Image (cartoon, rainbow, N blue to C red; front, top):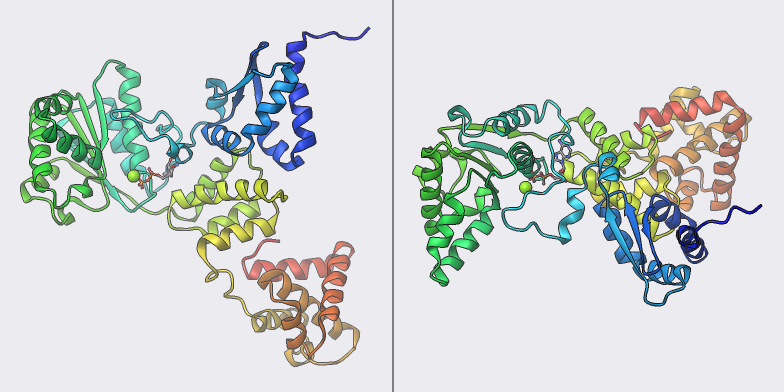
Length: 449
Ligand code: ADP
Ligand code: MG
């Protein structure tokens, strides 16, 4: 007998079927397969997605198609869908803060996605993380008050600031945690002047149990705001309330801030965050690609980590871009796509360092065939093979155009180069000696194999 299900339960399956007919399979696999329907009735279908990024992506790119599929599936022209990030899915896929930029933080609101537990620790940031955790554990301890976290962009300062807020609120849900950017603070102050509401302003800030201020470098040159901040600071400090600030540089190097403000800042502890080294970049990429359901090979991760070096925001950006690009252009995520994304982000400088000459040199030293033979006209088998191998590697590693390769290797035309590339590609499948040569040269150029 047929297993007759509640028609509502089948609705999502039906909607998915419809979508599969209308959208490329890659889009379905990336964005729709991970969806879990949580609640379905005649009017509405609730769908749980892994994270905020997913949610926004689906809405902005596939919202219309999803809606129409849901309406057909539910046989109701008025039906709606509702996307949500559920706790269970969140537990697996913890944080995508960078993706929620569209929804600015409300004042005093701590971003729930920035937590200590998803802050990857390394030698570059462990001191800052430990200090932040200590502060979150017992806010107001004189030796950590105020705490200043400083360092370059995209290195996790804001993340740590919010993590402190989240931790404090987890322990003391009623605690008055005030988290603002220095710009918001300034704006609030200016507005309070304009609207004659300085008392309200004072109340908001001076009643904080924990005051978390992001990017205080923007106080630079704003004398009146600094004055206000100074009073707020003093009042909180004297009553043992915790203040944490982030800044782009060490407090004493902050130009344009009044000296008395700076000396106040220095009465506590200043900790820095540094750019991540190679291993930490790999760890971050592994973590972030897993969070996004992006299945990269270890070699590919290493490749990204080798080239995208500056900060963690860029690493995250690369992952998102890979997802986005493959989805938008309906392309498989393969090495070419990854290389394109990395190249877009770091420019050509790193990737085009290798020249045709370098490749020929390597092939020559590996095969013991002279460079001038490789680029010459001899048809002797081993020489011809070394030549083909060189052509293949130029194409693969540098991406040199077919005609340039042909020109370099004895003025041959592009069809000869295509033939060479194909023939090496085919031969290396069967011939392990050749395969090893290809791999070893690519390794030498620190390239993916
Ligand atoms: P900053 O405030 O220093 O410019 P952010 O805190 O905004 O940098 O970090 C940029 C992005 O990188 C955020 O999405 C953040 O979650 C992420 N990030 C930074 N450091 C880490 C880390 N150590 N582990 C995990 N994610 C990190
Ligand atoms: Mg920041």
